[in-house]
Image (cartoon, rainbow, N blue to C red; front, side, top):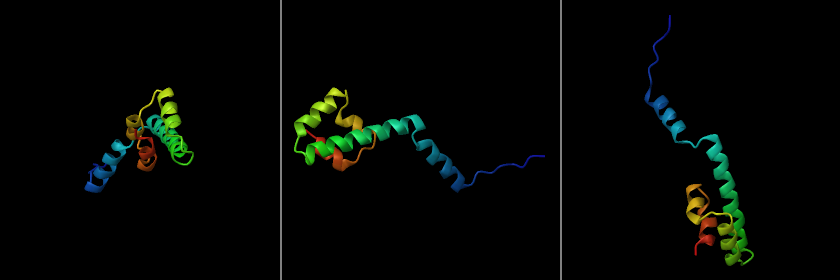
Length: 82
């Protein structure tokens, strides 16, 4: 005999939050893009090479909006703005 399962508001919210999380493959891709943003932001700010950072970003076939979609740190993105 099986028990009926009743969904409580807290379990419903937990299920909804699981649906909002990126899938593992997407999460790995986001982490990769966040790392790229951090490295290029550092290149742009600390090494005073914003043109080189922009050129590397372009050579990777990426844009600042791609990095934004991957939840890159706004501090890093600020250094990459044209």
